[in-house]
Image 1 (cartoon, rainbow, N blue to C red):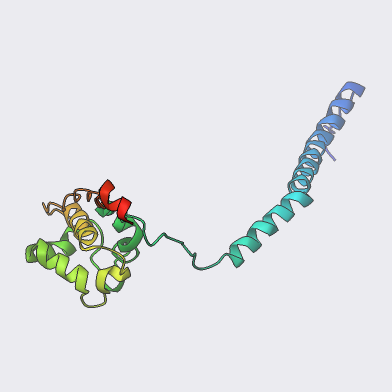
Image 2 (cartoon, one colour):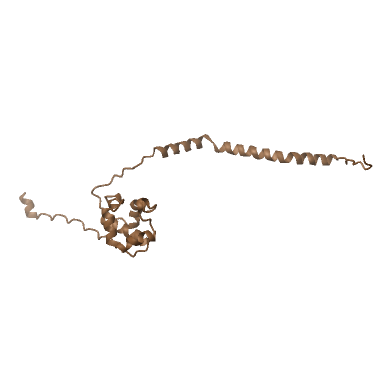
Length: 187
């Protein structure tokens, strides 16, 4: 061996305690974080929340496909605006471009159609063309509503069509004239 043996320095009690606490500090923090995480996960899985989630999931699965809307047959029909008709009927095909329908706002797809003219577009929408059903599949739409929807979609693609204005409200039917007093006495 060599003449210069390496001697270890003595560890003081203060150094020992710092080393001990330093060595235990990281594992204690890790264990505390893991315990906190597990407690948080367990707390988020409460019975009431799970039941509410299950109820909501069941409601979504058994929700009816269609709904029945009861409408008074004698009610006055109010024509819808083009944007409203588009949102209720036309958007199903014209937003995704289903079955070759020109997408809403797609100037390249609407360009050739706009060149055909407003009246031709209205005629195609009313009678149906290719895969598009007559009246967009809603037989309750009036010609005015369809014309407004066509103008709304075409104008968004660059046309300058003027949609039909709202019709003047019809005057209420005149009441039957009252019978003269002399005729009333005869009866």
